[in-house]
Amino acid sequence: MLLVLTGVTAISVALLAYVNELTKEPIAQANAKTLSDAVSAVVPGFDNDPIAEKKMQEVNGVEYAVYPATKEGQYIGAAVEATSMGFGGELKVLVGFDAEGKIIDYSLLGHAETPGLGSKAADWFKKGNKGDITGLNPGESPLVVSKDGGKVDAITASTITSRAFLNAVNIAYAAYAGQNTADGATGATQKNVEQPADTATIEVADTLSVK
Image (cartoon, rainbow, N blue to C red; front, side):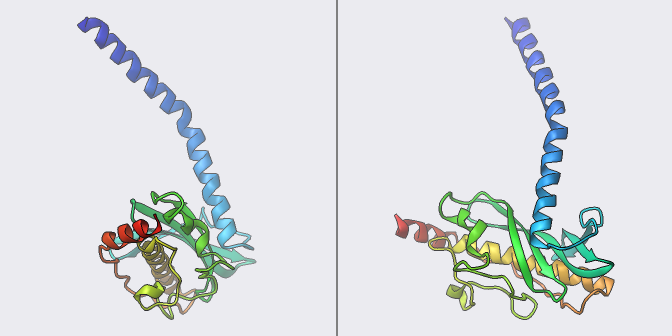
């Protein structure tokens, strides 16, 4: 019995390793295409290769990827990856900024938020929607939900997700501004970004109120 179990375990491990090796490259290619498409969406019009020219910028002790975009040699903006902790886990966004630091668009790359509530962040803050942040410059005024005294409408019943999303956008701007200040590309101002306080009880209350 012991020999049989050992043999089955060995075969299972070998098969898993084999399948992992087979799928590693396709998964990597799919992830690369997803990122490439997202960069093109949030900073349209470039003729360089932002991903190949990726730079890392530190904000509050964490490094974030900055993808600079140029057209005919002129800097037109950048796409910046940033993360923040939401209600269900890490929330990852890619934010596009123009050369003046204004938000062009964004893409929600990953999240673990509640389906139907927190997951609305994928569209809630886009142009024309209730929480529209396009055209805003976090360097002039950090993005904050209206419940906390800001000007951005939070996702209904998903206050923590909204705070986390906006915090990620503010972090993205800090990375954008820091990189540009170092390169001399723009006069954008880098600001330290405060992490949101733990307000999980608020999110739970919001969720329950919907039910």
